[in-house]
Length: 246
Length: 246
Image (cartoon, rainbow over all chains, first blue to last red; front, side, top):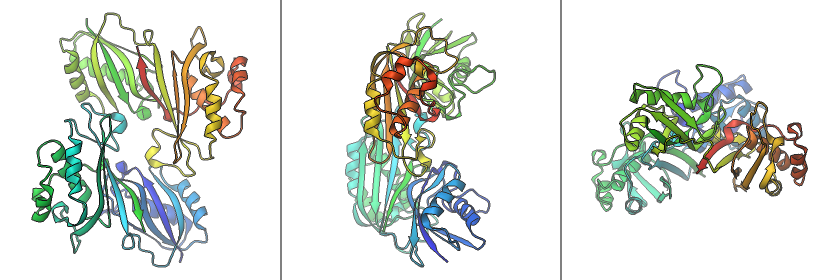
């Protein structure tokens, strides 16, 4: 049974995440499985590189799709996009080696978190930007973010309900870019991410940006390995899985 | 009765345009009037600088709002944004002189039209970008667009049902920017625009970009003053009223 490596783009606003606990929810995985089922009479299996939460977007999620079909990858891509709803598309497809596991084999991921830092709401940004009204100190956030780079124990940023056996991860980049006109972007790149890790890191950095937390306090926060000392989980809408590297 | 100059941002996807012919449609104007009515017991009048079509977005639409209220402009702005739906916001408000007419007094407007020129659909761009699958020749479109700059008769780009007495308009800028990764943007700036003029100009330029129309043919097309010789009206979703100048 052939496997395909699919690169997916989706607007997470109207999805209950990549995969759901409850039956019947509209998830990215279930939507993809349903579309693939139209090209085979046998079973369809889909596994994703990152289990994005409800509301989280992707520009480059990677999935393995396994199904009994004689379609080649390019034909499957076109046929799938004709079946998928407008908020989900396959942007690339290739044959995958037997047993390809997009999560375990991923060498790295890049996430972007977007904040609209204007005094008024921005209707055109509302689906992809988290709105923070009070002015953010971008240099302070940038300095604090630099302390996250390296091999670190990120237990303080791990959300509840995680099954990770180790909380050690390596961040290769933690950048904060402040746009001239209120657009602030966080980019976190690393070899792996704990549940809610990006959103908890951003929620903590936003407290630094609002002057409520010392920019130099992140090493002690990580050392504490205590989720209750970190900031709140930033809303899902601002987060995008940009890329998965192999 | 005081007047206010409001700058509006909206996601046009779910609006039936700025103002509608039929009663009961969800228009930007009617939504704004309904929100303003909560701050007065008297009548509310709202006039816009540009009557954007259904599906067209705005980053900087300008409106005059006239209502009997004792709120100052800054307080009205905050109070309005608390009442307005998430796809419409007031981004600036100021007192307006008596009889301020945002349409007649506008000295110029800037429109942007966004095209996603990728082989596959882009879910994250679907609300604001028109998707053109075949590769576009950006230099050819740029060269053709340059012939639109100046004081010209744009009758060939005027949509049906227009009440304009003159079809002469001055374009000060007609730019085509080709992004590295499939994002193509048209920017048209001028002293005024006929009904559907931007979308008809873009539809014509896209034919140039697809090699179906000679890049040097636009002067003759304008001279013909014949709508049937221009290209199709490009879809509303790609168009944004960026700015109105006074």
